[in-house]
Image (cartoon, rainbow, N blue to C red; front, side):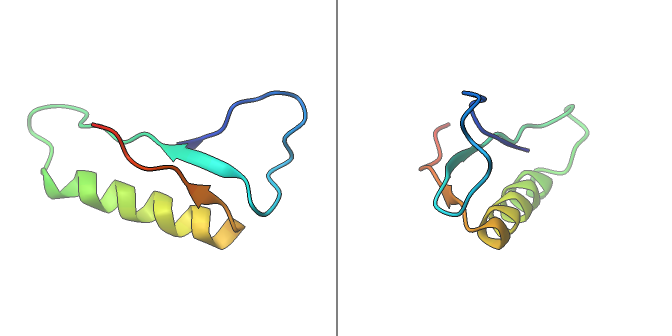
Length: 57
């Protein structure tokens, strides 16, 4: 899921910087699904022209 701070002035314009938050739902979840979540979020951000901040773990 991609989340941006809601400062009241951001309208999702090209050049926005965003962060990605991905997590495991439970221990039965396939570990590769986390990578798939990240890839989907990166693709979505790219389609909007957003810059993704460096990931932290």
